[in-house]
Image (tube, rainbow, N blue to C red; front, side, top):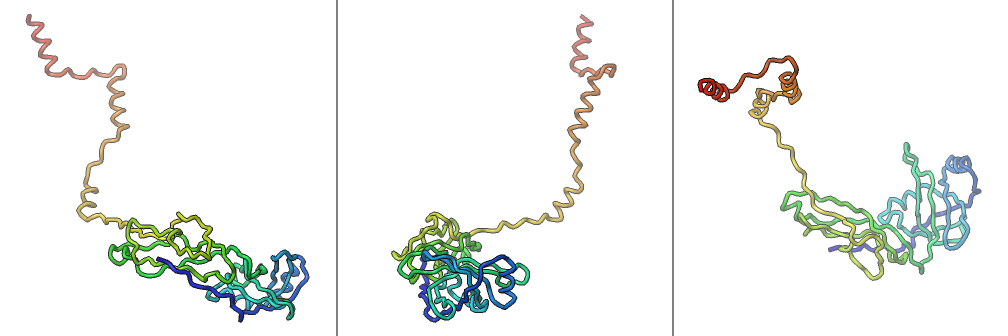
Length: 251
């Protein structure tokens, strides 16, 4: 029902980094004014290293098919190279330009945890035949695997999905190389229906407009209180009671 799209470690992706002095926000602003992107490289048991990068190279990686899960060669000051990946990034809210990123050193022989996007494929029977709407609830699944086994995405076939069926994480492919960390019962997608409001007919609107409104309960209570008040005129006797009283008098 689902397949994993392979994501090979790219040998061609190269990101050049220059060490920089770690400081306050003013230092980061100076780096950005020079047309560079401030970043921090950490991991592999080594001390964190502040670096500056070419924002165009970073943007190219983030917008590639494998996105932030791309593993690339990081060249430090044109010399030492290490495998790395982008683990966090920040954008400027108004202009949308990159402000800062975090890089992590990657050991090819050590497993790591990553979030992989779930891509739905096919036209669901619940949409095509039953007129429903396909709703994707869960868009990323967390997995653990070696860097070379990270898939760029996990494709789930929803062509057989109908009303009453739910695609769950447990329905995604369980390649022995991939360990799923997300809850296996987590719903991924299902078919929903949208209830339409029935418009009132002109006849129904006219009937509502001419209907006599019911007497408020407050007014009824008011009448009862008046009848029971001291000095109020007693209610007229019922005809049956008056007739019985008249017969007694005759006797």
